[in-house]
Each structure stands twice: as structure tokens, then as C-alpha cells.
Length: 273
Image (cartoon, rainbow, N blue to C red):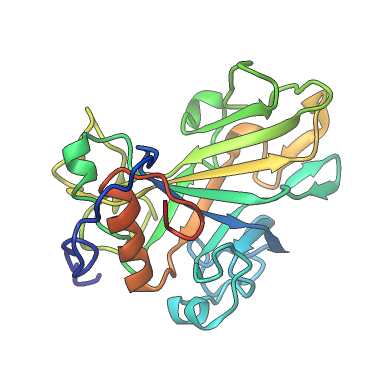
């Protein structure tokens, strides 16, 4: 458990003036290439190396079963921006028995899914917050309606909760949206999900009253064609899931929330319009 600090405008700043020509989308992002693979999961199986299925890690270059918040803060990150010391991981994707890594992992921090007046109240993730999205144990597509697969550069071809057949010249793409209503108290929970919730009717439920940025994970794999040989380390495509271990420096994340999310301004990796 942690003491929840409510940040005012940017943790002490003032609400920024919307610059002329600003795109009115509440967003900043981190672009994080693949770093390493390990059968570790410091959220689900902390301190138990090899206890997990194979994961592909992005961001922090040191994440393993023993990783703590301080370990991540003290280590290097391959993200753009490098100030994002967070760790992100997903089940490794295989084509047959060959692991295939995304061309990059793109992690969007968004203000959406709740009313604009609630976006204006968005709080930064507390340092050390851990979030899991998706269902690694899904037994069918309807068990994991959060994850979706589609084809990059295929036009409006729709999406599915399982792998899709992508035409030549396109890439298989995975989207996963994380819950963005926090209980305001716990950095984790026994099932690793109960401290977070998704909005209901464009608002956060009373049990999870704190609006935090909506993390959207986008993975683009350099494969297409028949998905018969595709699998994840966790199983079929509908077992896609993602893990996030927040290690953004507190002041930097607060600045980005204040400058990009609350005023509904589209920012780049530098957290500026």
C-alpha cells in the first residue's frame, strides 16, 4: 500500500496555455524497442526466475524476476524518451518455433474513455504502480475482449480478438488497452488486477475513483499471411496480455500529465506539443 499524493496542476505547476495549432488529443508516448527475453515476470512471479512462460521485455534493459522499482530507476532504458525507466512486457510471439519480436513497442499515454472534465483531473501513475491487462489464461476469444489483432496498412479491414490473416505488404498488429481507474491506495493487488478498473459510462467507478492515463500498447510484428503457425508463449492469439511496471521519474510524469493529458493536447515522445 502507498500514500496517495494528489497532484494539482502538474505537481505544483499551472495549467498550460493551449498553443495555437495544437492537436486536441490527450496524448504523449514512449517508443521502446525490444530489449530481451526471459521466462520471468516480476509482477506475477516476483523472485521466481524461470517460473513464467517466455516474455519479451521493452524499456528497462535489466528487468528480471527480482526487479524492484529502485532497480528500474537505477538502470538504463531503451525507450525514446530514455527518461522513461518503466518496464513493459508481453508474451513472446512465435512463428512456428521461431520467436519474432515487434519492430518496436509503442506505448501511448492517453486521456480518453472518461468525460473531458474527468480527463482534466487525471493524476500521474504513482511510482511503482503495476498493471496487468488482458487474459493470459483465456480459453477463447470472448475471454479476452480487451486485446485485439489487426493488419497495419490494410485499410479498414477490422480487428479480431484472435490472430488475423494479413495480406502481403502488411504487418500483424496487436492493440491492448490497460485499465485507467485506480483505487488510490494500492500499487498492486493479490490478483494483480483488483486495484485497477476500466471506466463505466465515461466515468471511473466509486471503488476506483482516481483517473490515471490510459496506457495503450501497440505491437507491430513483421509477419503476414496465414496465422496457422502463429502462437504466443501463453497460447493462442486471444491470450495476448501486457504488463506495466511504472518507473517514470515522478516530476517528469507529472509534467507530461499536466501539459498533455489534462489540457487535451497531443504531445510527442518529448512530452511537448
